Amino acid sequence: MELLTELETNNRNVAVFNIFDSVCPADEEFRHPDNGNSFLYRDKDHFNSLGSRLLAEPFVDLLRSSGMVIHAK
Image (cartoon, rainbow, N blue to C red; front, side):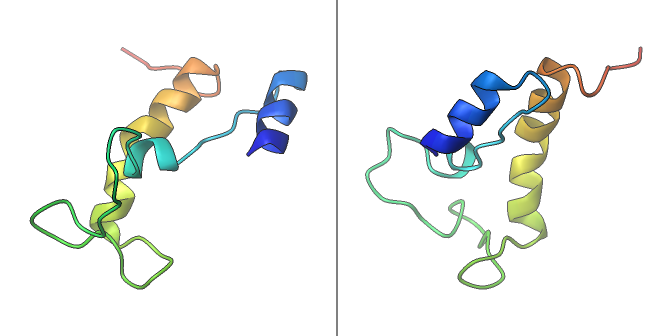
């Protein structure tokens, strides 16, 4: 992750989306494959549609904050 952070810092046209901030909150000791009601993965490495939706809002927020997407009103 250090290399990606350095790449982002040194290049204004690079934005790194760290999915772990969304799916592995720092205040939780263990990571769970579900949200309490449904599983978030279709196998050990890939999100299912519910898991993917969990990442959608933070990803769009990154695109907006980096100027890659402008919210039309």
